[in-house]
Amino acid sequence: MLYKTLTVQVENLVATVTLNRPDVRNAFNDVLIAELTSAFTALEKQDGVDLVVLAANGKSFCAGADLTWMKAMAGYSYDENIADAQQLAKMLEILYRFPKPLIAKVQGDAYGGGVGLVAVCDVVITSEETHFCLSEARLGLLPATISPYVIKALGEQACRRYFITSERFSAAEAYRLGFVHIICEPSGLDPSVEKIAQSILQNGPAAVIECKKLVQDYASKNIDAALVQDSVERIAKIRCSKEAQHRMKSFLEKS
Image (cartoon, rainbow, N blue to C red; front, side):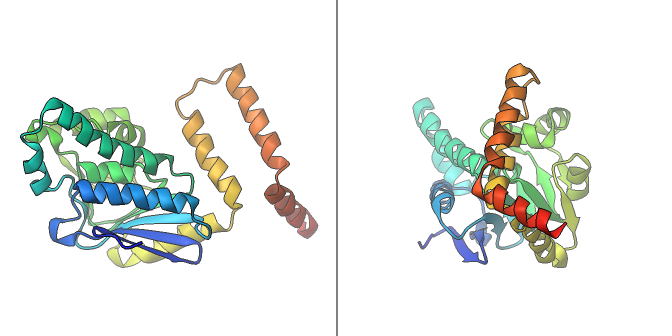
């Protein structure tokens, strides 16, 4: 499928979804939001795709909201704002709940909603030149729609600071806070993404999907009898799967 605001390429089990609005620093508008929703909905069901890389063209990864789009929203009523915000919320939830591994390849700055895009990814790899900024408060707004994901990924205390100060912070600081997993020189982005992708692809595809779901399901739950029992049932179920049986047999035969 052809898109106006992004490209999708599939090669060797890896799909690369690339934001392609470099002239406006890959800022969000209603079209980009709709196309990301469409692309990831399709990739979830697409055979021959075990992993997705989210990337961007140009100097910036994503500058947040498009200015033209923001001007159009300025006169929206409350109900119109609700409808508009629901589209962004839906897209972010689809990316967060996307069952296959999702790697963020962040080659440039991410502001506002761009930080939200990074936050929904499983592995975040950035250029050392990248900066992040949650700049909504400067406009009298707040990062409400992205906040469930940013708070999870960046941490409560860091969000207390950066939500209310709108300060820029570096890739190095994001790494220190655990928001970013790998920092490299710009020329090292592709090799770093390839290395992580290959590490993932060596694993059982079904197991990887279940591992991702395990973290999402358990991250905010208390350890109680129901959770422990659920963990027992999950391991028992996957041990009986064809993938696990085949991989365990192969491993044991080589030992």
